[in-house]
Amino acid sequence: MANENIVAGFRSVDQASDPASFVHFLETVSAMEAIQALKRCTFALLDVKLGQHLLDIGCGLGDEARALAQLVGSAGRVVGIDNSETMIAEARKRTTGQNLPVEYGVGDVHALDFADNTFDGCRVERILGHVANPRQAITELRRVAKSGARIVALDPELETLVLDAEDRATTRKILNFYCDSARNVGIARQFRRLFHEAHLTDIAVFADTVMLTSYAEAERIFRLQDTAKRAQAAGVVSEAEGTSWLEELKQADQAG
Image (tube, rainbow, N blue to C red; front, side, top):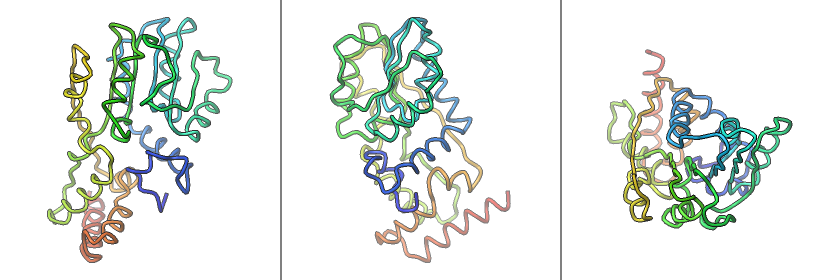
């Protein structure tokens, strides 16, 4: 994924120079226990019951859709939707032979191909930060959800990303550059307002923190070296500043 902007790239995975690299990225992130804990939290908030029909938007590799399908049982139904054919093909391949009540399709959250009041619950993970119109996406989720259904959204709040580095000025420049490549920076902090504007009720917002203490892990997720190089190319920091910044983080990692 050397030439891919990981933040912006998920808007159009199929048009990327290496779509398979985004598959690998999802595998890397999903392998983190902290991320798995957040995913389990979304399941608990959905309050899944046997026989329910659920919608998983931005299903990616289908891991969560398959887990939900096990929870709803044979009388239930789970539909996984993603805007990437690459992801849907991978999800279908990984589900083959499992005999689960789950199906996948390429779709657009702005215009879902389902009737009103179809689902007992909707889940949307790390998608609203990428879409062109979050308000329209939430309106569509409300439309296809039955009365009383739960809609659960999970997204990172990118501007809360912090690093323990002594060069605070360079750190701010690089992290701001990283965040600004996102389409909807600050989407998570807007959830309460956006859901309220969509006339949803009983809105609750929860915040959690994921902490990384390994340079290698941070590099895999945030691609620090690539971000620093792109920041240099954009004139945000100098080559010396970027190199020194990365070296400080590596040395901190080596020092434990």
